[in-house]
Image (cartoon, rainbow, N blue to C red; front, side, top):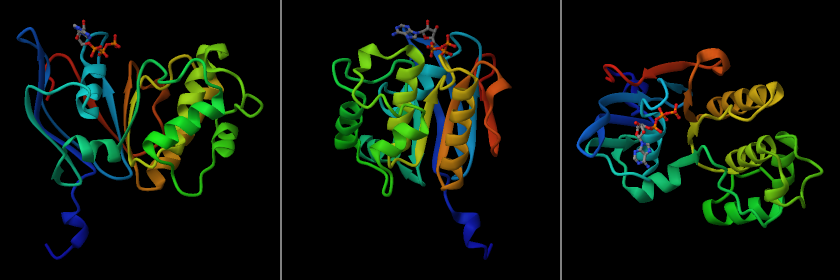
Length: 215
Ligand SMILES: Nc1ncnc2c1ncn2[C@@H]1O[C@H](COP(=O)(O)OP(=O)(O)OP(=O)(O)O)[C@@H](O)[C@H]1O
């Protein structure tokens, strides 16, 4: 009761969150929380609603019911845009811009983590030497790596990662797990959708399984 840490609100909390299409439930009602330093592994079969949940949390779709809180406060779109970095299925890249130009553009939009540089981020994701390569000339895995560089540069504490391992080779899978581990050690949190636990990052992890009794 006197322990101040006991009252620290989770980085993200959802209460009674549900989403339906054409009056058919896609997921929910869901109740879950993710603390700073934790990952939430969102699992479920194809079509279970994993992508839909991340899009609702990111504010790209509107929930039918329920509340989303960030650090204990109801999250409106402004709070979410500051707190959340979303890595979707498709790389959010400008096809006709180079790798560095893409990152400059995205950092201009979303800000940049202090002490991180674009050159450093490209090095971390294994794209040194591709600074001027146009996004449309990159392979699917290289595009994913460029999206990961954008994620690494983001100042947002909460990462929403939809199938972050897709299109990556083994080295890329380890890269994602190293990035998640470092982000969580730094006080961040991550929601990660995956079809299997095979690639789960070695961090403090909660699980949320969608489909067949969601909550
Ligand atoms: N744009 C859309 N319009 C209509 N229905 C959609 C749309 N996107 C997804 N759905 C439906 O919503 C449900 C949940 O889809 P979602 O993409 O969230 O599942 P998922 O768990 O991410 O699946 P996967 O593992 O295949 O990526 C599915 O039944 C899907 O057909």
